[in-house]
Image (cartoon, rainbow, N blue to C red):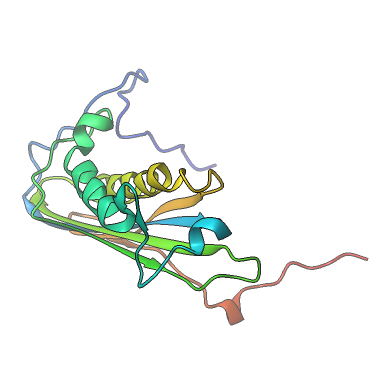
Length: 180
């Protein structure tokens, strides 16, 4: 039987601790995260040229600014995160075509970069999350049917462990068997 790995933010007694990064080397760290948001038809119809203009201003531009601000404040929002100086933070928003019922999928990607002793994935995840929440906040005047479906890390580089999401091409995915 495999031993259960100990979470890095818990001491041997199970008490919360900040990870000690004092002896780690400063390296370039980059992380890319994504948030997927489904726009209901009423809001999807307002997308023109990859932007939605509203009485509150341009939704996507505002979401980008909010996401960058959120990434910069990650250590204030997530307990035990180390404060990191971001060298760069970029958020890109793209909208897919409406589906058969008129909903559209928005992809929010946040790429964060730093030179530090610890990773920057929480900043990328926070940036994507705050951008998605801002999109919801600004779009709810049109419809509360906005759905934030997923927020996930796509990749992280730098430090002792690099990681990339493994994406299986649709043709190679196993289809669930159907029992008769």
